[in-house]
Length: 232
Image 1 (cartoon, rainbow, N blue to C red):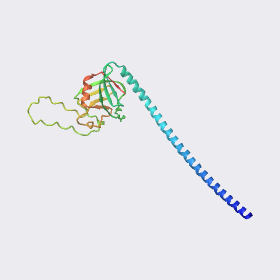
Image 2 (cartoon, one colour):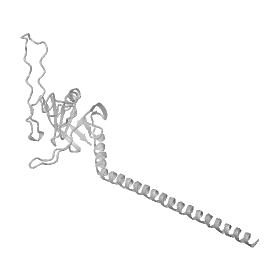
Image 3 (cartoon, rainbow, N blue to C red):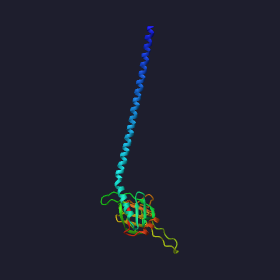
Image 4 (cartoon, one colour):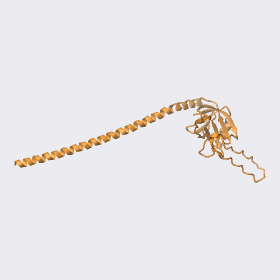
């Protein structure tokens, strides 16, 4: 009887030890899972923090430009004369008359070029600008910084001596198009040229604004030198 009791007690202690070992193992596994979960949560919080810091830094950098944009837009809204508004962000050029948009044109904006040696930086200045020159079918010297080594295509020969009823349009210059507006800061607004370094669809003069000939012709005929153009 005593042996049975001893055996039973031994078996009970063994079972208790096994249960205790299993419980400790489970607890250790649970602790490891908790540590892993805490690590993942910390990494997520760190990633969110870095994301928010990046967003705030972007807002801080854009704040001066946005303030300048709003100031220029307010000046344009208060202008009661016919003027132009060039929105560099939306890539649009608007002709305004008596506070109403008369024509809205899509434009392409060229990138800026930093100063290089004796050449100053080429970029579009924001704020109130003036139209300094209106040039029709102008011929412009090719600047050295354009880096274009092509040649002007030869005009096709006339095979017929018959007098044309309609006047032959003047050839489009290769540097700019047939209509060009130059602002007081040197920014060039031009229609798409037929040949040259900026004749391609995705090629725009650095520090320039390009638009179709139809849009440029409408704008060109509606403005004069000294006209206000608000760039923002």
